[in-house]
Image 1 (cartoon, one colour):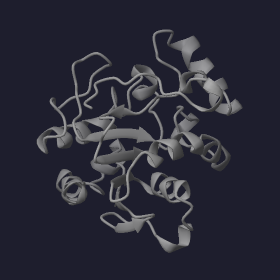
Image 2 (spheres, helix red, strand yellow):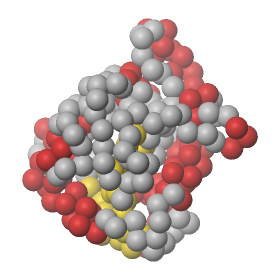
Image 3 (cartoon, rainbow, N blue to C red):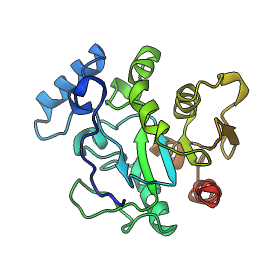
Image 4 (cartoon, rainbow, N blue to C red):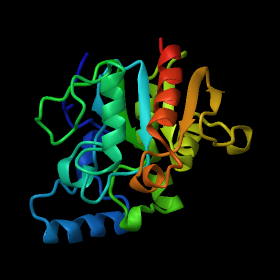
Length: 220
């Protein structure tokens, strides 16, 4: 099923992801930002894309003025520019830009999520916050059938995926372009498409597209 903006996914106990306040620091930070920017989404950001995706992309966390503002992963900030341009070029998105929920963007065969669903101060979630948020990511990744493909953007996302499948971190080291077989699924690593990485040329468009193409070739 193709999707432009999925419904808020249910979690244990019947509560919605958008009402989660399990991490006191993150909940307080969201409240603070909502006070300064009343029009911002300022809730845990759900995944976006195809419910039956053959490729799932995992990022770090919502950006302060990006997904935290818009309610869609990698939307409204610099990090999403390269991501959505590349998805469009490879036929996974009907548009090259993700501007806002309701802008008509549709992903086909691809879904995007984050290891941590709430915006963290200074874009740095703590280890405890990553662990607390893990059940949401674990439930999302459990939907991927054996043989499915995951692309992790950055080390934190890479390690969150390994933990989701109960795999020791020492067995699979993060590296740009690295390929891993994890619990009968394929995991590809890429540097995160952040402003810092792209402007310093640590990650170029060519590098990013090469990993995405490799992951896509293996997608069932």
